[in-house]
Image (cartoon, rainbow, N blue to C red; front, side, top):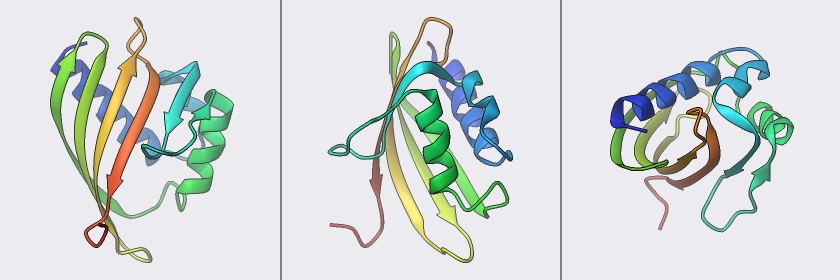
Amino acid sequence: MDRQQVADWVAAYERLWRTPGTDRLAEIFTPDATYQQGPFREPVVGLPAIQRMWEDERDGSEEQFEMGSNVLAVDGDTAVVRVHVRYGPPRNTEWLDLWVIRYAPDGRCRAFEEWPFAPDQR
């Protein structure tokens, strides 16, 4: 993986978050991928479980948000990305995340770990 491939993957992630349904998540996650929503959280394992988690976590594909990202590092099959998300109504929340993404040889994610931080979080 290189920085452009990682940036393209992040753009696809955002596009799919904004897309109704979760059928297309197989474009960016392997069938056996893991998705860890925090450093001490149990990972969600497998594409069907990730699809259910996405539907549970978002307010639908029409959810209002702005997202910016910066690829911080790429080393072989592993990338670290800083992501800033601002949700609009009804949430009106803001997050600054670090994503650690491990890729399969085909460029899809095989392991995703996020470190989410809110402005008032200690």
